[in-house]
Length: 334
Image (cartoon, rainbow, N blue to C red; front, side, top):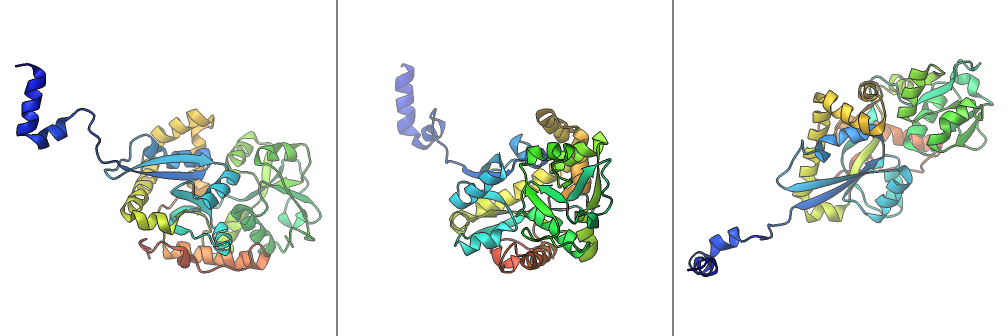
């Protein structure tokens, strides 16, 4: 009896077994969750364990993508991704346009080290104190971003500088992030707020110094670490498959823990691709930013305080409490 006849007889006698064993049989499709985050080597380290199979799931596959700020904003509105990293200042603006976003966890907040938000000058600059910025020019990558708003809060509240974008005590220029070091070096601006990788290089070069660490100033004044970004999704996506998004939250948290417990493996790998010194990542996670991966009452209070201060600055008109943006299946820790 040939092989074809044997297979036919087996199919008649044991149909369920043949269904399982049939070559090419399509298993039930796993849910794919797409995640977009701010394009930054430090955040490549955050998702490294997911991307490299160190954190796995029986329920979902996670596909990650780093995007520049303009792309993040566009993708948030178009709902192109299932989960997206969003600046906290963007939540009230989205709500005012009728775009419903739900917080899944905290993606970025100030480190206790308080080294974010530095105001940089050349080493031979006459500027020694932020109060001396009056009448000067300060360059930033985005004047209405969460990070720069936090800088403005410190300048206004601690140093008494009117930071109104029009008619304030200093001229504030928005300059593409990649051009900021050159603008500072050639004197196009008197001071600048650099992105994190630039700040690290500035420290190592010895050609620049800070006259303020505004993150530290805000921590000292308000006794809290401001939250800069959260991971969000959309009510209709969450409602369609809540288990998949709860699993994403678990995987994201595990990926952070893996990075911090396997620093050499992760940081060396990301450094090789980015061209940064592996020590940058230790510096970033230790002194600049935290990636909590959960959401707590403390995070909510920090967001609410930031909203209150942002309204004072005129950056936003009003904002609902942070907890009004939470996904109803999210466990908020004390």
